[in-house]
Amino acid sequence: MPRIPALDGLRAVAIAAVVGYHIDSAVVPAGHYGVCLFFVLSGYVVTRSLRAEVDRTGRVDLGTFYRKRVLRLLPALLAVCLVMGAMGTDWSRLLAVLSFCANYARIEGLDLERLTHTWFIAVIAHFYLLWPLAIAALRTRHLTRIVGGLALAAIIWRAIAIEAMSPGWVYNATDTNAAALLVGCFLAVARPATWRFAVWSVPALLALMLVPAFGSTSTTVLWGGFAALGLSALTVQYALTDPVWLANRVLLRVAELSFGLYLWHYVFIRSDIALWLALVLTVAATAASWYLLERPVMHWAARRKGQARALPALSA
Image 1: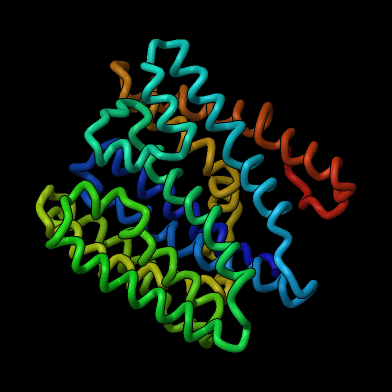
Image 2: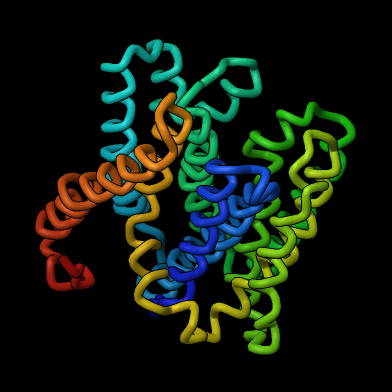
């Protein structure tokens, strides 16, 4: 699919909201809704990419898809776990993270400590595992109706789960977070007209993250997730118009480094060190992760497949 820089900019907005929430939840009480935005965005981008591959080749190359995702997620995640293991983190926590079960381990009561934030990566990994199989199996003729039905069912199930399941389940489980992922998937297959008029959706979503009531521990935060879901869908549709302000150099740079930034910031922010030092170490670890691990792995994979020319140029 053609690259749309504003979608990367939106990814930077999502990660910034989450980092702000982890730094000071009193200032950004509902910054966790940045995860909802990221889920909608991921559902959209992955589905558009898969559908573009089907349109081009008539099939989904599952082996290539899984290999790319493993190489994107596992090296940086393994590096964080090795560092945490060296610092004394219990093996049971590391195993939960590396087996991509952190979200359900957290539901079962395992305190993941400075790896708590990896529950999100587990949900994304489950999506990467299952969704390509669905796209490969579904017929194009009925795809929009089926994906729309799945998205609606996931939304209804999340609403039921808020009352029927524990708050921890609703917040962490893959099945309840599937609502946001599948809304993004539906936008990708339905492809409604882009909504340039929705320029207000991004500031509205950010404003929602500043509402103290949505940062509470009651079910209010869970019901508020539906407002975040609707606004996230609007922001993705708006970003598809590729507005210049969402494609500026700073946001694109943050988006490029976003995975390492997400992995490392929580490790240092939740340490018993001064905030300024935690931020300095986060920047250093994020840069090291990108330049010494993530980018070299990407280049190695591209060379191995003889596709080095197809890899976008990466600025130093």
